[in-house]
Length: 461
Figure 1 (cartoon, rainbow, N blue to C red):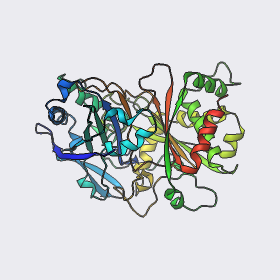
Figure 2 (figure 1 turned 45 degrees about the vertical axis):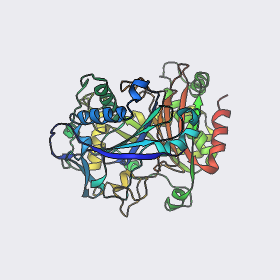
Figure 3 (figure 1 turned 60 degrees about the horizontal axis):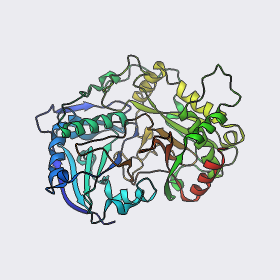
Figure 4 (figure 1 turned 45 degrees about the horizontal axis):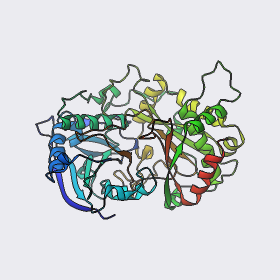
């Protein structure tokens, strides 16, 4: 599918905004600090597609208004040394790309099929990480119009500035402003509630945070360089309501009725972990880790404001050996995941922040992925690939129904990007379906994918 760029514009806040340097929290500066893309497909009515530039001009105008209350997105990151970053709120603006394709939206085929992954490479705006970090926009929007009048909206946003809930807060407020609605919820921008920019209060506590800066390697390997070179491939797997019920029954078999059953995430992530170990053909003694992304908004004391705009999610690590995961029932894998999640108490959260504040260099805690990423140093950053994996749940995020005034999307998905990594799993609601099914979006090394699919369904019995 050919996509032609028609224009590239800088959109700045439509009114003067506060300017200055904003300290980032430790959670902003660790984990994934590159950009994350999503994509929405629409079929606007004719009144929205004519004249030809109506959608473009409307989106640019409303985007400028949205950047007034959300002015940090119009700024730029700056390096401070030691892997640390700060946000320069200079109102330099975000990038808006206008593109077009002679293809029709219907010619893309089933948007929920794997084929759309490759189309998305052209429909989400790329990020040139060869540029200095202070030149990179924090948000890049690509509007692509199709021959049939359909459009796609690719949204690529910096994870160093927002997590999923914060990004969606902005997107939905922007959509509301485009429809003519007033701002619904004002973002809470003060990151000092997480002690952003403050020095360590003292030495780290005695709580164990050792697995934050190191993950298991393949047996016999001293680094991850060879694993990083291997080709990966994407897949989208559907899990029906009936299959979820079977997994729940399997995971909770033999458990005391007084004990809280494993959650949908715990049992499905456990199933994914076991199947990944099988597909990778690990030796029984191979250590393996699963990164669980936990939202701390309601776990921290005092709770963060619901409109907190920044990263309030961080990874905790579940560990085991591949042999134990494969030989023991599914409930064992789920129990290891629950154990990791349950340690995220208020004390643990503040202790982990203090632990990171005491580090001389944050680079080793950053998941850059992109070659030549924004804070490359001589340190090797976290690698969630073989023998490890990261499993993120977007099941509770309000991903769908993003209406800019021309109706809700006909499909939404994760965008394809060159920062994908082996062992990347995301759970999503099945869009357009109310049958209780879910989607598992995943990336694995090419030799492991077919085996994973086989085990994924065969083990649900």
